[in-house]
Image (cartoon, rainbow, N blue to C red; front, side, top):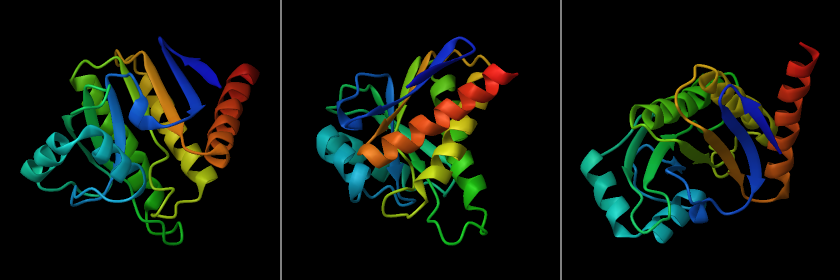
Length: 182
C-alpha cells in the first residue's frame, strides 16, 4: 500500500528491514544504543561490528530522539537509531515520544540530504506499544514531515509479520480516504 505525499511516496510493505536497499534504515534502538533483540539485534547482526563501534562512541540517545551511524555491511548507507518509548498505559506521554522519534529520524535524513528512508514499527515489539496506535502516530508524523517538501522522496515502513503490515496498511488507507474526501 502506498500513497503520494507532496513530492514523496509513503508506503507500507511486509518484509525484513535489514535487506532494504535505501539511503537509511531506522533502527528501533534502546537509549543506551547497546543493541538488543528484535529489529535492533537483527540490524546489528546484519550490519556488523562497525555500527556498534559508532554507537559506543555516541554513547546513548534519549527516548523520543535519534542519532545516525554508518550502515556497515547493510545495503543501506546509514542506520538512524530512533529510541521509542516503552508503552505503559498511554497516559505517560508515550504518543509524543513516539511521534518525536519519527520526526527526529526524518530531520536527520533531510539534513543529510537522504532521498529514501525505511522504518520498522518502532516500540511495538518488546516495548509493547499497541500496533494500531503506533501505526497512526508514525504515519501521521511522517506524512506531516513529507508535506514540508524535505527533499525525501520515499519513506517505507517495512513491517515484520502480517498483523503489523495490515495495521499500517489500514492506517495508510484511512489517510488516503480522508484526503480524497477533502
